[in-house]
Length: 526
Image 1 (cartoon, rainbow, N blue to C red):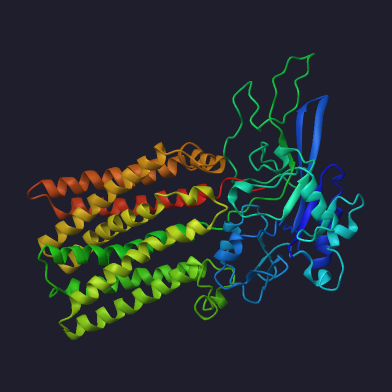
Image 2: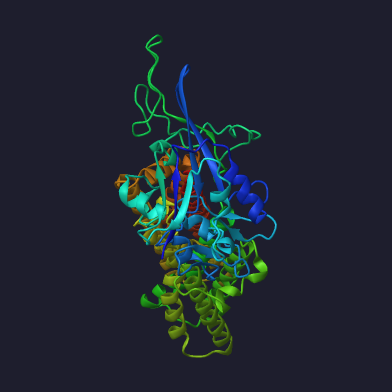
């Protein structure tokens, strides 16, 4: 059994009855929607056309929101409906990043994720969803897609219909009949960012310039025909009404990239110093390094919990965790590193002789601390920029650069041996160089989807270009490379030169990661 929807846009009159019925049935607050009607217009007056499209959860067969949910608050029922249990939700917002359809939102009353659940309370007693019943034109058809006798199954198998973003591989169970392709293509129509009709104009973060060059239609074929009397060129269709496109993750996520990079990097670089003959009898090796790494690991945990909409439930990650979610796997990795750092700190104070074992254990787990976020972002399938193959290498390179920079800044406090100082300087230079190579690889690589290309435009030429180029590449890469190389190549060069490079690396890494996080969320999904 697989329940699904067909939206007959040839019958839809854009009356919003489905939206109102849904809000009434589920007590959906103002400002958020489980279902809504998107309006687009095309052409120039007097040859204009308005098209409607009903937006909602697609109840995907391979639902990425279910896979990424860390507490199984989202789950797929035996009848194919993707449902949710708000009592388990911690408000991490990862499901919003995983959904390619903007179908999830955070309820402002209880701070948990919610969405269309196919009115399961009605379906279970033999009734149709509220939106189906209320539609005056019968434009919403529901039923079992696996039953060949149902009208919806016969329609899907007999007619050619469209789906939203099928390239995402989610196997959506919602089809559109007679819909204008640009209406269900998030990049098929230009959003002027003016708030749309019936809404107060508000600033929008969607500042990607997707307007096509003059004389070209930028929407894959749909557009108003020019008036022969005026000789105007075709213009792309424009969004008249839509919901807001959320940006769930902000500066706390960007900062957590940096704090966990410092925590992992300082341990990994110290382990490398052992290969160059450094001992473990210094205060830094015995208790300084685990203390610094532990502080930044704790800051990582604080940022993660702080970013939850339900921080009171943070422990659900460990007590009710979904082992398939990289949020849960990441929590396990962070917990393991906390144990290692704690043992290392206590053993160092006690003068134990097995510190190298703990240092190398911390370095190995540190690779996981630095890199697991790449796999978490990979599960956020709604954000194509984050699916980059270079993200793991960016995370590891950033950790070495951040660890090298943090170690250099700590050097005067702990009076590090010259060998250890140079190891941290080499890590700074090597990490910065690797970050530069990763950036070049991303810039010259082919963008597999329009979503990815649009996000890269936003990152490198749009709203976040200054943050990424000046902050991330100049301050975060060029300055550490130059100052670190000067310190390593010269004789008698003061340590403060390398320290300044390390500070620049930490600042620049934050700018680059913040631009990356925000740019990934800049492309509309509905």
